[in-house]
Image 1: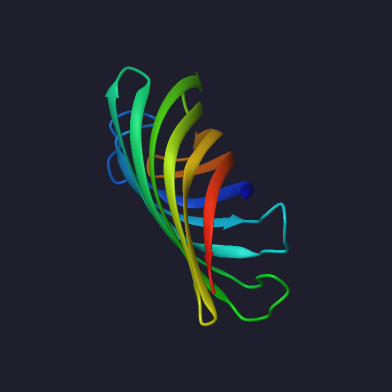
Image 2: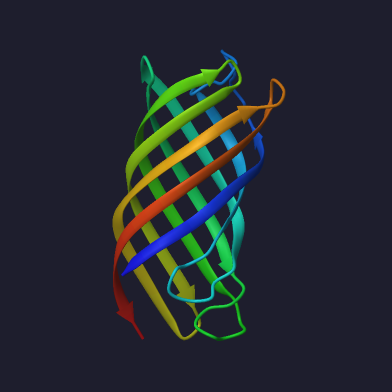
Length: 154
């Protein structure tokens, strides 16, 4: 099953480590939102992400995300969602406080609800723009394409 997360907006990202205007050595807290191409899903949650730049313009990042779907397959009750990511990326500085980037990575996803649970592994690709508004606050816009293989358990 293909799962597409449209546009996720990081409203309040807090850089713990900030060695340059837009640092790739950081830990941040995010608000995340997404939707599926195949069903009416409204996902809202939080994530913690860490990144480390180990070569010029190349970085590795990891993320743990937990969220809740307000609607899943026409049901009104919520579904719990968790995911783990490991990404390798490349970034290009457009301006001093604006950076364009792309990542490729592995993802592990788990859904849980009282009537069923499911998990999936797959790959993802992202492109995005990070814009720094002050030394510690940034906004990030990105598009992520995910290809996941689900095993349904009822």
